[in-house]
View 1 (tube, rainbow, N blue to C red):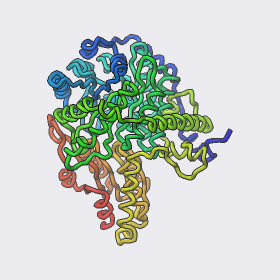
View 2 (cartoon, rainbow, N blue to C red; view 1 turned 30 degrees about the vertical axis):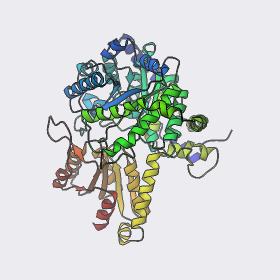
View 3 (cartoon, one colour; view 1 turned 90 degrees about the horizontal axis):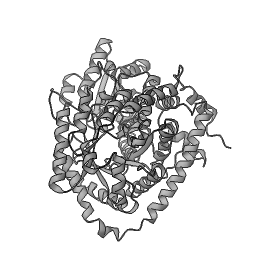
View 4 (cartoon, rainbow, N blue to C red; view 1 turned 90 degrees about the vertical axis):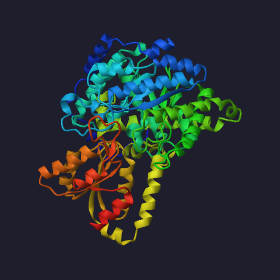
Length: 591
């Protein structure tokens, strides 16, 4: 059998294997014991529909070919969240439409244990402090709550899983978020050990149909050039969650996917791969957010509604049990209001009325054939992945060891090391089966910028300049565009990666002797992040040139309902802000 990894890459992966590993089975058993003793509250949703789980309801709807509908909700406080859920219930009653689920978006700090939160910049969303907070939200209305982001997958997984499960949330966490950097939690072995305990808790509720969910777009696959690579990664996630840790698993994806044919085929391939007789294989399908406009926002209705119609038609035909998670027109530029959330889901849900006419015109052959190719592709890539880890000496029976290695691994290496076009076909570069939308868009943007400045005085000034580029959150493709453009223009770029804390940014600058540091920010933490950069650099007696860009918003005053643009606040602190990559390049060259 052909070897997957060469000696260099074997040694690279082997170097990431941690020492002093705990017995993961004992940690799992500890969690399982906790789970056995927990009681799950019956929510108003369960009472209304006479079901004991989300999965039971979804299967009933699927049998009728009916798509279920979901919204994102991450308001400023628990009180606001409760009020928002009641507004959603009122919307259902007034319209006859049906928002079934509300995906929760608390502050990211919820994923960090309370004793590790000091000094961490706070991003957008609401706080969850006491068990009663989770229960207030789940009991607020007949819309079923899904606690996902910043729960299982993050280091605080045990506490958040206990509290959300008790409160009646039947989907648990975003397992793939273990790949993100959790502020205040540098001990990755400990972090992953806590997640294994949480998986034990969920495993104890297998017969109750409690399910571990994972959104591929919030995990390593967000770095992939090939959408089909998502399914191979998800098979590994399922291997950890189900084969090793005996819990249920579900797949979600969509916001980085623009081609509707590709999305539909991936949807069907994932459903076939992860469904069971008593649960759907997919939790939610996210609409494409890559191509939402940040201007003329109402035009985004015309972009998302056809996708919702496609989802309705697919569910009528294939009955997968997936939910469509609509995205308000304003999400690209601000935290949406409840009214905006309801407006978009209402517009999407009304496509059901027109579906029977379109249904008569559709031939699904192209999508079904592509579905089968994706399934075959993912089998090969998953086998490459598992074989390669074994070749590197990684214990593939130990979830903690695998998770730590994959967290430390350069995420772009996943495809470079295991993609079938490279391993099985011998190509030098990844040849995507389904080119990922965000990657394609980022590459086009980078090439346009390079073409604009190549051979100019700007490029000459950047030549051999050492510049550090990092992202303060998970968002990677802005980082990719900046790095790709600067490198092509001759700069010596230090790519610090994503989810970097301010102190780590300064450590990288010290290590490489960098004065110019570019930071991409999107999650509402811009102002506290900027303050941390300024205070830490002053405490070290260092002079750095910081350039902050992305979406520079934060809550300024306690009790603010929506974040404010803090660009001027950051400038007043003496830090540079930029509104585009072009502006960043020109300002770096002018220094």
